Amino acid sequence: MKSFSLGMIGFGAIGRSLVDRLNKDTDGLDLTITALVRHAPESQGLSNLTFVTDVEALLRSKPELVVECASQEALAQHGPAVLTAGVDLVAASIGALSQPGFEQRLESAARKGAARLFLPAGAVAGIDGLTAAKLAGLTQVTYVSRKPPKAWKGTHAETLCDLDSLEEETLLFEGTAREGSRLFPKNANVAATVALAGLGLDDTRIKVIADPKVDRNCHEVEAEGAFGTLALRLANFPSPDNPKTSFLTILSLERTVRNRWSRIVI
Image 1 (cartoon, rainbow, N blue to C red):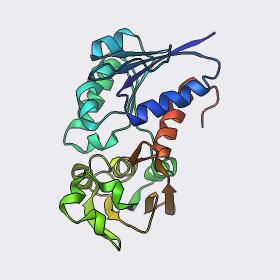
Image 2 (image 1 turned 180 degrees about the vertical axis):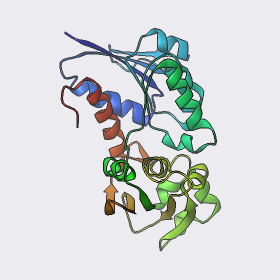
Image 3 (image 1 turned 90 degrees about the vertical axis):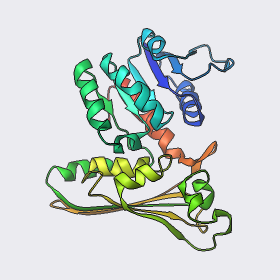
Image 4 (image 1 turned 45 degrees about the vertical axis):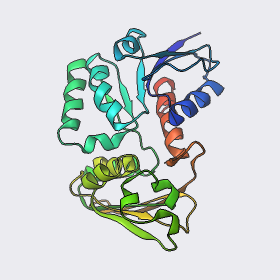
C-alpha cells in the first residue's frame, strides 16, 4: 500500500473537518497526518493523527505536503520554514499575502527550498478562468463579499455598526483588496485570492457588506479584459463550526490535497 504523509499547521474547525473528510476515503493510501498546534490536545481517537508543538518536529515527520489552516499569523510564523525545508505548502490564510513584503518573503523561501506555494481557490470559484484571462490582460476586477451579520462578529465591523440590529444591507468597506484584507483578516481571504489571481492587491476593488436578508456567505466577482467579461456569484453555506468560513473552503483544501496524489487532476 502506498503511503502519504500530510502535515498541517493548525487544527481548528477547518483542520478537523479536513481530516475527517480525508479519512472517510483515503483513496487506498496509508495516510498519516501530523498537525502543528500551540498546545497538543487530548487524543482525537485517530490512529493516523499526531500532534506536535514546533515546526522542527513537523518537518521531522517528513511531510510530502503541508496545509496551513490556522491563521495569517501562523502562516507568517511557520510558512517560510516549511518552504525553505523543501516542502510544498498549501496556504488557506491567503489574506496574509496582503502584508507588505510577505508575498516576496514566501517566494524567496520557496526558491531557496525548491518548493512551491499553493494558493487554493477557497470559498470562490472561477479562479482558473481569472488567472487564464490575466495572461492576455485584465482591465477591471471587482469583488463583493456579502454575509449575514453574525459572520462579521468579532471583526472590525463591530466598530462600524450594531450588527444585531441591522435591518438592511450595510456597506462595511469599499476600497482596495489590500486594505480590505488588512481590516478584515479573518473574512477577506477570498478578496486576496481574487486579487492575486487577477489585477493585484492594489488594483482590485472590493466591497464588504453585512446583509441580514441573506443566510449564506455570498461572493460576487466581475472582470473585464482582452478575453471578454466574467460575472460570477456564489451563495455558500457557512461551515457548521465557524460562520466566518464557507464550507466550500474546506472542500477546496480537500481537493488540493487529493490532487497531490491523484493520477488525473482537474
